Image (cartoon, rainbow, N blue to C red; front, side, top):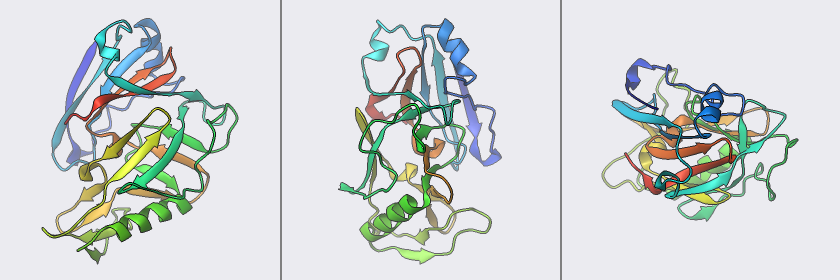
Length: 238
């Protein structure tokens, strides 16, 4: 079963949202249809109309599962509607960041904090101290940019003006089993006059949420029976 849809992201349509946790809306369907689904994410924050797809019931013996790198999905009693994944680190232009919330070992059933992937959350949320580390490293690694005020009521706090000579670093997110490097379209939100770093500081708690904007254009496999999350080996597909 496949469902394709186009969304005009200026209209902030949210009807694509489907829970991917072990209590999410998708799991009963996955349990019936072999326990796997593939999603090519599109973001409701894009400035243009974009399309993705969701496909249920992937045959685990088919080539559909072969072209993916996988990381375990880990249950956690502190957020039972979601699976944890082990975030091993974040790099800015290849340099690892000293993130306070990163665990040196795989998360357990009872860990506080951790990392979840939630397609219904617009932007990636980092604990405030880790957000500050990412923001500072990102700005330091950039050149020929000019600090600018965020658009009113936008919710962003790190914005700047760029030009043809600007150099913008790449952000790499590392999980157990695979990592993926975000394009600038997955890192920056473009407004008419400025661009803003598309991450959010979480002032309370120690939970990291990988949001929809950073997933946009990547093909993910959610294998709820095998309890693993895969990303297509081709990287960003659109």
